[in-house]
Length: 306
Image 1 (cartoon, rainbow, N blue to C red):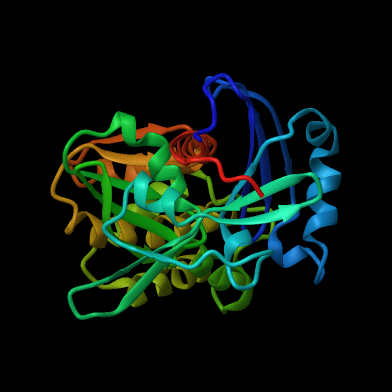
Image 2 (image 1 turned 180 degrees about the vertical axis):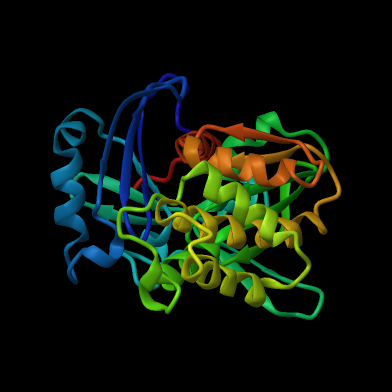
């Protein structure tokens, strides 16, 4: 039978760098949350059970039902693999491919990621972001574009309540590499904030120069060498260049406004600003969309006894 309305549920968004656990009441309202730097890369082999028990031990004593997990925890490198589901896919297809695992007195439900291919047949994948999209589906109408910024930003096309396809931009990872492991980073102080507004705006402007990404990136070095960019603005300048090029490329394939942005407030504001420079509109959604998405999937899926 389906999980009964009114029953509480524990859900976990467990990615590469962090773990976010939520306790939701029967209406999907978050009543408690836990967060820690226990991403799958920080957990030793065989250690996932201990980490989860440590984070939510008190909840486990009070909530006997299934625990829903999404993100890289369901990857080949995670606790238990949930194979990718091909697009187009909506809540029904995603929920129907959940992989369950008996764990102590509970059942773990691992949500699958999604797979799509571009016009040339090249594959793209996501894990965790699809649940965030499910979480905001009630706010979307018809054809919509959703961007989920991060280490690997996802631009998602939604049609008729289903994820039709998506494209990944490695913007966050590129920023970390250029800042920490390139000649550009030698001129960026360790404490320079990527959120510096003036530096970020200058980077967005540079990204619209038409010179191309690689040429624009070198401007991080030259403006520093010639003292034309204050040290505290250089990280923001680099961020603006990278996000500016990502947004310009992605908007070309995003026909409808508004663009829906799912991210923490500061990062969401950066993308809203970048999108606005192209004369497009954007709407920010709460970063906890994954909790709402997992709740919707849990309610939509027949409960299977262990």
